Image (tube, rainbow, N blue to C red; front, side, top):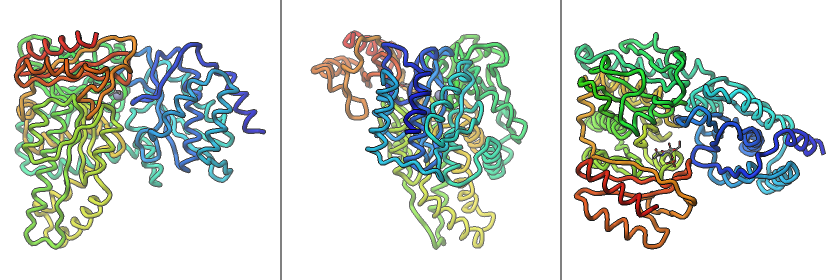
Length: 548
Ligand code: NG1
Ligand code: ZN
């Protein structure tokens, strides 16, 4: 019929590269951009089917985040703005790896039957398209459009060059029936940031702290977006380096991934930045880390990673919740459940710090979708990977309560500390991206909280001291030989390996170490923590030898 012949016709234009097998991992499909045409075409089809199935707007984002500029990738944003539902991942793999158009078309028709997907001309598939600044993005976007038009009636809207979190935000907003253009996104960030700044308790604190922030844009999309909003940020002066306009290469010696892993200054930064607060975004601006350049001309930095951002957020939110819980005369009081979600990569000192604040802390496997899922179980759930990807989720139930509490307070205690605490929490829920980790909104929240506390980056960094740690990767033939359990903290396969690891860990005071297969590279990652850097290095090396 019409649908089948359209699919066949377009599919023949996108033959898959022979011998390549891709898998829809924690970050969608990622590979060298030169082999991705057929994959992106097929993800276009997938997005259209997903839209029909969910009767909602779906997002398709072309990015390879912090990876090198010659790589690219593609992933789907589900109706909630989150990652593609995990039960569709096997179908994504089958589509991507179908050897020829006939196989592809029969896979699709089987799947359409199994999922009971219906084609209704009144409700066509709708897909928002976005891409990062990679040069390969333009032609891959065309492939995605072709994939979408292979499904009869499906429509796509090209939203242009976006950060990954902007795409997720837009999909979420569209499905809530809200306007979802970039200017609405910026408007929401600016107004909630302004609101937090207006609520700063002791304005004289602000003068004590440096109002300048130097941002390393990784030569990607984030710097460009910051340039657009920075003139509207009262009380914060942003200077963007590595904006991509000075000729630097995306993610090369720059960006959050580089800064967090290497712990050295990114390109363009030096001793002239000593004493100034600095931040680093990754290539698609969903990761954020802060750092300070020491005054001694060394290239080493003081890193303030995702764990410390989580700790700062937790401290601030806890403070506001405690104010509200202290409402002795309140009619409508509620004890909110505040939780933190980390991965095994979280520095042990951060976990101990969070627990000392009285927070529930749980571990999830690496990959934002796992953290997000766990954080969504709290009234307020904060999740961060050490690498700087994370956000704060507010439950609908909590937001409803907050709304009614705010109304109660606006009649009974206008201008009180109680009312301010409620307004701050509400502003945070609007500033911080509810769909996915977002470096731009995270950065604005960090800046507002530092001013609230009257803290320099050094005071923030002194919340706790990181245990020395080391990350290594070992190239292996088959990374699936390692299977882990308990949020990746123990290796259950190959047999005996965990016992060998335990013997090594026992040799080091405060030793903690684990191995896991990467979801994005053909490597086994090794992480080790111990009381000294030498010990952490040596523990990591001995695990690497066990793996090899
Ligand atoms: P893998 O390759 O599975 O370790 C890396 C990061 C993840 C996440 C994904 C997706 C580390 C140790 N791992 O995953 O946190 O960001 O890439 O981009 O940083
Ligand atoms: Zn990223």
